[in-house]
Length: 246
Image: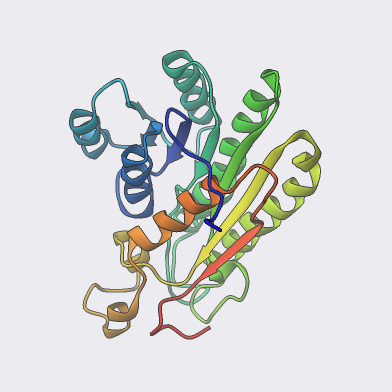
């Protein structure tokens, strides 16, 4: 018997951190599946290229910094204005810094915490508020976290703390909104070959990166979560490449 999946044609999905890496790969895969996608990042250049390729009928570009709660509300409001509704929020924006607990500046750590934790909270709040305005109240929230949010390693203490916060937020929110028909999922990949994964304190020539996941691997997991029938929820999806340890 063939697996039951939901078509994403004409569904409306918002993606934060969509200019590169997992966000860009997810936006592209969603568009190829027929979804309407509202993409957000601080810089418009890569987003505008996506809009030019797929057209204004399918792509909405919204510049914004997730550290500002107004950016999340703006993303959702513009998506609803352009496409008529919001079905899913992919809270993907994030940054990584690696090194000992004293290596980074206070300001750099504050920026990482505000981006990874507060940025996720603002995106989630804006999405839930919009879902509750609709007659069905249903929707999907996918938080892109990390296996570092399950077990942190040396030289990533503060980064791991931000990822633990995302996992905790999503788990608690699932219990809060599940009865309303809102599904909350967390994607927890190991290292992914992106500029983000290199981060401060790592270089692209690091041999370990040869075994990293690809952005498209994670994007396929995100799309698979959204394609599950509404009676099914995926609370946490952990991912490693075959060459990565668990």
